[in-house]
Amino acid sequence: MSEALPRVAFFGSPDFAVPVLDAVRAHFPVVLVVAQPDKPVGRGLKLSAPPVAAHAAALGLPLAQPPRLKNNEDFAARLAASEADVAVTCAYGKILPASLLAVPRFGFLNTHTSLLPRYRGAAPIQWALIRGETTTGTTIMQTDPGMDTGPVLLQEALSIAPNWTAPELASALQAQAARLIVQALTTLKTLTPQPQNEAEATHAPMLSKADGDVVWHDSAQAIYNRYRGVYAWPQTSSTLAGRRVKLGALRPLPGHTGGQPGEVVAVSREGVTVACGEGALELLTVQPESKKPMPAPDWWRGTGQKLGARFE
Image 1: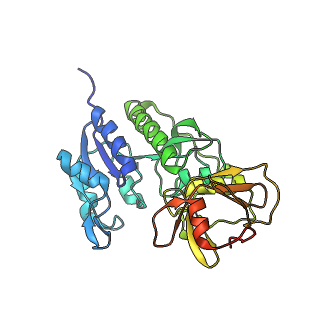
Image 2 (image 1 turned 180 degrees about the vertical axis):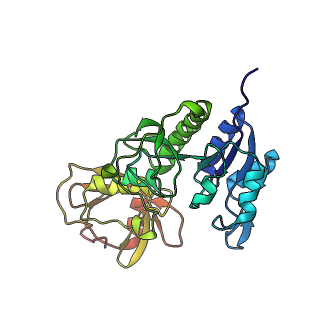
Image 3 (image 1 turned 60 degrees about the vertical axis):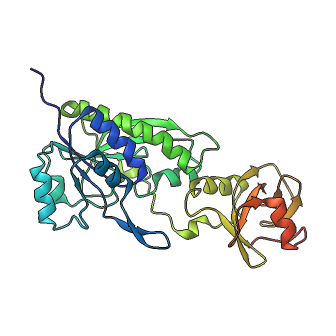
């Protein structure tokens, strides 16, 4: 008679974690799903369930959405009562207290979208792009009380396509994470934890709105890399003649010369060319405040500005 499969408690919240949950439940019994509480969204501030919670409810899986984990004895008791052998976290979004980590007999496994110890933190996908990385990957680690500091169980690299934005990289990493966590759970008893090298650690803090601001003194490639990283949020934006404008589709012109950083140096039927600290960017679409996205040349004509005007 074969040994019973490990019973899994799954902790996750956003869309990214839904296919990972599906991959786990296709191979292992999921005895509890844990997501963040429902939150108000939109202009009407209507309560909305996180995607993982909505998905688990639709599947009829046991679901918990505790408002806090620290000193939450009721939730710890529920996790223990589920008799989960191991817990899996995937973009759950809350720090796990040490007391909770000890509840399942095999502890917690975390799917992290970077090659740890590089890019520890909340936004590894975005910062890998902002920093111009050409390779990233997925790490399955044993969770400890630190911020992504636990020992590595499995790790696999992924090449980043030159023009991928954060959503496209996330999609590739999502599939990789789903496959690797199943592999880790399948070989759970034979995995050998490897400590991380603290000397190689880098960090990927949560993005702020200011991370979307263009610094025109940077090179065209650096600005483009940041654009890729903040594509979903907060998006790339700048100011011309006191008016804020979001930059939609754009392309770097690294070999372009002439003009001061932020200066509009050319306008064609296709786009608006803006000088950078090195090279230039061609803006293809933009979105002025309170307006819909439009072709950049159409927007430019409506500004009444002349060549030589500068973004701030």
